[in-house]
Amino acid sequence: MTPSQRIDQMIAKIPDWRGKTFAAVRKAILSADKAITEDWKWMGSPVWYRDGMIAVANAHKGKVKLTFLNGAHVPDTGKLFNDGLDGNQRRAIDFFEGDRVDGPALTRLVRAAIAFNQDKVKKKAPVKRKVKKPAPLKRKVK
Image 1: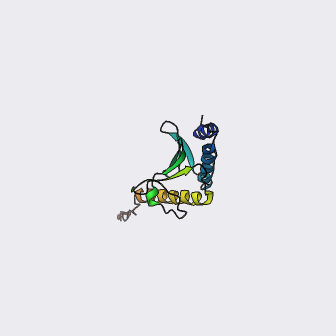
Image 2: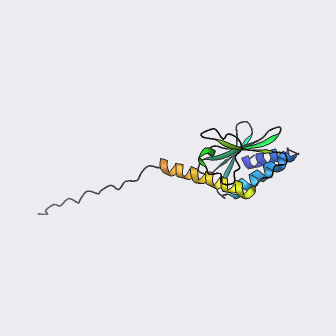
Image 3: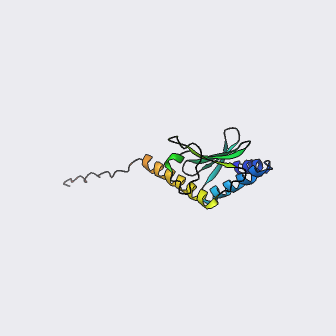
């Protein structure tokens, strides 16, 4: 079973508001970029990647939690982050019953996380240096 199929199955098994919320969160994430990939890690957590990890989500008893790995470094123009605000790395969004998923704002946040990942990858890339070619040897032919 693929990670995407496992996520489909997990969402289908959550019959209450959390399943609908999880599906809306996933839809907003995947609509941000066609190159986003889904994975299944840490004993059953959906994880989304694009040039590095973007976010991980979990359905808890009273909430759906979406944690951005590098959330502290990502501009949150929609003011979505409501957990982990004191940390210097991760930020999270806790969705509670009755909360509306702001799809466009979440999509912008995911795109900002992708941009952060891509900048990080560029900084790690080895610098290409031009190598001077030695001048051809000049030989006298007899």
